[in-house]
Length: 244
Image (cartoon, rainbow, N blue to C red; front, side, top):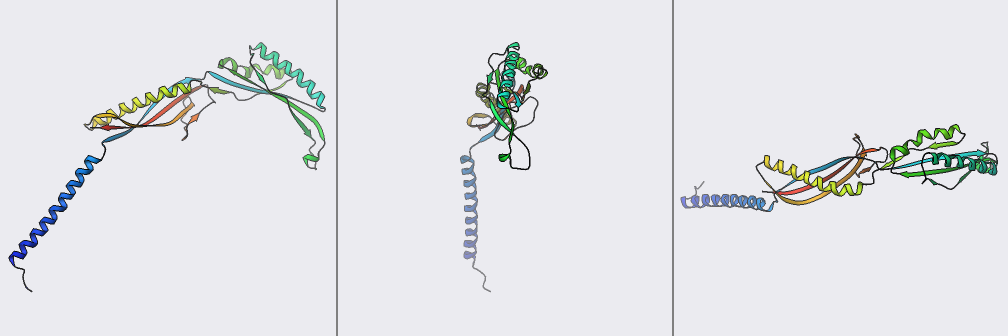
């Protein structure tokens, strides 16, 4: 085998070193470009929480009667409606909304289809709804309404709803609080890494949660609890800050 001449060997080595230098240079340039082009940011989540008490209660109840004839059922319901009105008056309720009368024919349950069964009587019913800022007082109607039952009225309260009417205003204020919380978190993280937060780059509002007090229940699309008088409102903001 013929050995390469000295000039050819030098040329080969020079080519290898040149190629290596070009590769190394391209890597340095690429890394430098990435360092410049890549935004120096930090993403954090901030939150704000408040405990509130419902300032509106929606209280509903129903009363009904059954009789063999429609006229008899109507007369009995009329008497019961007067009793319900008197009861509400003694409780200081003046804004009750009374529904129209719902009439349900009662069918004999036999072997034939229900549509072919004879009518054996009628059930007449009405509902009332009370909306009041006096939450505790209105809630007391549950217990007080037992007097109607003792007076022969088939009166049945339903589960009340508790509403915090200031939620819309609180949402705006709490979003600002959550953003400030995010900034504080970003400052702390940046300091630990020897960096400094410059400015807010973007902020995205998370879901707004209104949950029963001390509840850990959450929903991906937010919650608006109406089951508990006392609630916790939580606002979340996902923020991105530039750092230096």
